[in-house]
Amino acid sequence: MTRSVIGWVQAAPLALVLAGFLVAPIVMIVIVSFWGATEFSIYPAFQFDNYAFLFGSEVVWRVIGATFKYAAITWALTLVIGFTVAYYLAFHIRSQTVQIALFLVCTIPFWTSNIIRMISWIPFLGRNGIANSALIDWGVIDAPLEWLLYSDFSVILAFVHLYTLFMVVPIFNTMMRIDRSLIEAARDGGASGLQILRHVIIPLTKPGIMIGTIFVVTLVMGDFVTVRFMSGSQRANVGRLISNDIGLLQYPSAAATAVVLLATVLIVIGILLRFVNIRKEL
Amino acid sequence: MRSTGDLELVHVSKRYDDAVAVNNISHVFSEGSYVCLLGPSGCGKSTTLRIIAGHESLSDGSVVLDGHDISGLPPARRGTAMMFQNYALFPHLSVRDNVAFSLRMKGVDKAERHRAADEMLELVQMTQFAARLPAQLSGGQQQRVALARALVTKPRVLLLDEPLSALDPFLRIRVRAELRRLQRDLGITFIHVTHGQDEALALADELVVMNNAVIEQAGPAREVWNAPRTEFVARFMGGHNVLTLDSGKVAVRADQVRLGDDGLSATVTAVEYQGATVALTSVTDAGEDVLALVPEAAFFQSPRSPGDAVRLAWDTGRQHRLSA
Image (cartoon, rainbow over all chains, first blue to last red):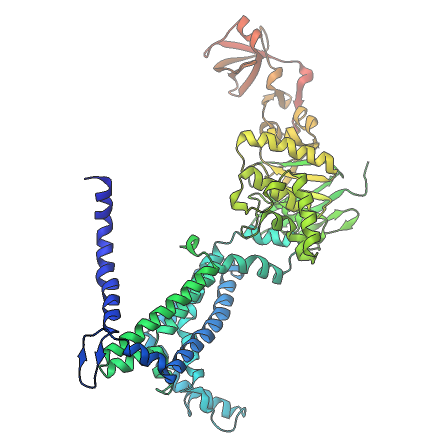
């Protein structure tokens, strides 16, 4: 066998897995997105009705806007919290044992499922929940706060809770690779703590920030469960549009929405990758 | 003669929880001299350097530069600059921005700091690489950039932490000549940490030999080489034999040992031809190894081979008593 044949054979298993489980479903979704549907049937076709409806509907635009809003706010919050946690772990904890221990502590929430972690907020945030009763007891408020639960606030709170670790891990990883003598060199050059952060640590942590950003943005944009539970079905994002369509057996419409969502996320990632070269990180 | 620009260590100690890294060191580094801190790894030489730089706090004592106690000052305000062992260049900044870093931190405007950086790059002959990133440079080039970055702050004392250890042997010899020339041109104090005694001898006006957290011996390079005070210094500097005589331990330079008809009797264990000299290793009756560097011509008049009995002699004026 020649070298090139061996090469193809070695690449074949992964290629087959990817073709079967990644490429084929996407192709299928794209095909179905052009099909037609009535109230009671789905028929193969090549028409743009689904896309025309999507882009012609003001509701859909609002939902896409909400999806971006959730993604942007969650991204900003997870970035600030994740960076701070990673910075503390990487630069303020000297002993490696403590570092690993605290890092494991960060993962404790992952010992239960997403849904349970989400739902556990409900008794805490509800009208007669712990948060409201405590605030009333302390005399901070007179009446229960209505916006704590089933609101954008609770949705974003759950997102931040669920996804901050996805920011912490890659940022911590890049920070640990920063040569400590660079920080000494910066101090030798007269940099203050903030200047070291701005001119040395943040530029060198960019690849980690970018990977974390991709994680969080794709997870939030593709999510539908969190939005449904935490908003009490009062808010929508693109993921919920898809899940509703599927619930109504409107597969062509769901497929079209999925294609639009996929394209949007890919464009966002494409833009992010223009800013930072993450290849050296992988 | 003491001058005002001297750097002085006054009873400096550094203790960690369970170890002493630097034990009550006092020393004066005179202004404008090239000093090498020499010693085996773990002897405290790097810690001493980092204490001077301000990257390590001291447990006791003080560091005085120019008549002022600088031990409480941050690194950048001490009048010292440090060149790090692995150069510690900022990988995300161009060569020019690396050199201009400290000026940027001070808030010097862009045109001015780039002008100053270019001046330094010219000094180390790196002008044509100003726009490159450190990763695009060779080790020797990175070393020069690190030097330029340290010098841009116009320090009075430049601290070099094993600056040549990352270079290949050939480059090392060339770079050390450049370091020496640069020090002479700038006229500032260089304190250079190294574990290579040939490097130290080639460079230093003054040698400070450290071991076990203390200074074993300090003085001009020739003095330390010719008259080692302790057994450790004699062995560490190399080229010396340490012998136990009735009067105590003495050091005898290997090139002063003659093979003669009378003297200390010994048995040859190895003979190595080295070109100008022949290195003859022998073991005395007391079991001590003695190295004799015999001029080639003299050796081959009466060659010896391993197993032969020889007599070793030297001028008694050439043997030095060791205090420890």
